[in-house]
Amino acid sequence: MRIITAMLGFVAALLAGPALAQKADKVAALAPQLDALFAEFTAAQHVPGLVWGVVVDGRLVHVRGLGVQDLASKAPVTADTRFRIASMSKAFTALTILDLRDQGKLRLDAPAEDYVPELKGWRYPTSDSPKIRVRDLLHHVSGLVEDDPWGDRQTPLPEADFTAMLAAGVPFSRVPAERHEYSNFGYATLGRMIRNVTGRPFEAVVADTLFRPLGMARTGYDVLAVPQGERALGYRYENDAFAREPELAAGAFGAMGGVETTANDYARYVGWLLGAWPARDGAETGPMQRATVRELVQGLNFMRFAPRRADLGPACAQAVAYGMGFRMIEDCDLGSYMTHTGGYPGYGSVLMMLPEAGVAVFAFANRTYAAPVAPAYAALKRLKAEGLAAVPPLPVSPALARSFDAAKAVWAAGDIMAAGYALAMNMLLDRSAANWKLELARLRTALGTCRTETPIEATSAMAGRFAWACDRGRLAGSLLLAPTNPPTIQALGLRVEP
Image (tube, rainbow, N blue to C red; front, side, top):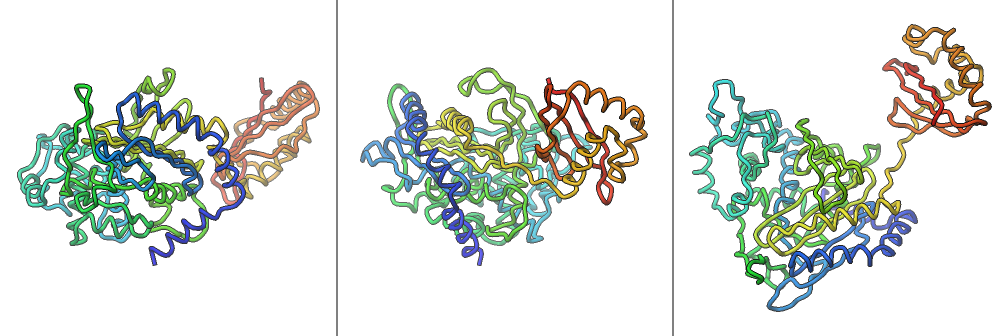
């Protein structure tokens, strides 16, 4: 049933109406310019091959392969060429853990040792150190040391060797749950947790949870089982020459970075992720609940400020937090976006999503640590500038609509009491009715007649803002409702807009 419902949802996205067709046409018109961004990156960074795509409202509306997947055969990169995506694999692991939580098979706030017994006794060397929770591993706040690029080379580690490593213990970098520090070891431990909780290899569980329901038939962990002609072979570039990177077989650390996929497969997954936004009524059509997917962007509030990379644009401070398999970034150009890169021996990848707008850009490359971040960012920025990443307006709730009608009555009468029972009890305590009359008279004198037919813009179900054109300027207003039943107005802001 999971497979059927997920595929029906994806097909529905493919058959979406004129709005999607118009967006696809706009992307097609921009495609030559966007392709040029990735072509420039490929040449400048000595990347043998690259594929990139744009997903809009659940559909892959543009995909382009550049270069070759194999320097010997010169086979061109296509949308069906398989690439390792390194740490972008972590989101699959995180989603599988969340699915097990939804099934009642584990708890995120439980000590990780409840599911991985070898962790018993693991402590930072202070008597007040807390135990590592499952949640801490998901958010990279377990206290384990940052381990790029050591973790990448552990991918083929046999399960028995990982068991011995866990039993021996590892040194801590800091006290758990106090600060973000990226840990591949932590996500490998989550892979072991999936194995222990289900009694099956984590690769099989992830496949059954996500790959098969989403129709990702060319996605998996066992790269050595894939014919070489279907794969983008990994290279590094040093001393002005390419050298093959050794293949990293499937192993215990695969949960942190071992996935191999294609652009066509990955677009199905990205389209499904985007479909989790916004929260809404309606049947669930994916392999897990939309609300569960949205948890991926929930961090532990360890926000930090960092300067934006110089190759992404002018100086700009970004606010960054790690959710579960994704980073959330507040940026001066893109606004709020979710992203993750992948860096691996022989590979580099990136995914950038504007989830509330339903737009994403992803790219895979087959050169060591060559994540195409700059062209992906530039492409997403250009798509947004062209109006292709607009966030749909929030619906105006019935309570907000009633309160807005009351605000219009207040303006028409020049008297706050015209709102009647729509006022919360604090309103006349915070400002007297007489003072409201004086302020309303001042504004009406300054602005003249205002045209109040312009609707309110909801900022939530309980708040909104509006702007009315007047004879002598504009009136800017805001409404905030109180948590009463029925909701009432706790704040009404009115000012002359500069």
